[in-house]
Image (tube, rainbow, N blue to C red; front, side, top):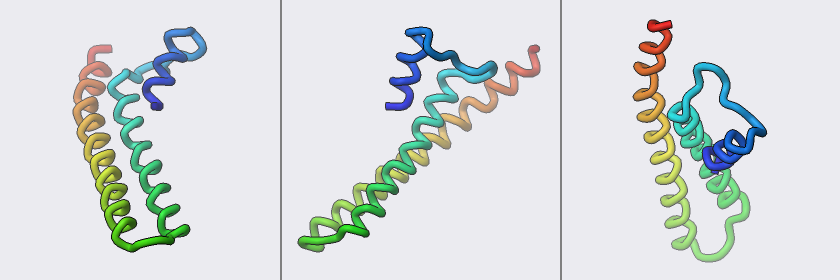
Length: 92
């Protein structure tokens, strides 16, 4: 969602990307934001626990899995973009 709305804002001329920030960087940060979003769902599930325990255990596993996937994707994307950013700086 973050990447999509930033893309719309840039296309409409409402905003622009900062200097030395690429779309790949923004994609990595967007995935990193997914960690916080899924963890907030996890905490809310703990705070408002009710009903059968089996349902919530599956829920928790899915939410934690989503956080792990977001973290791995963010790390991979940002790690991949680091060499490109360093090469770009050296050319300037």
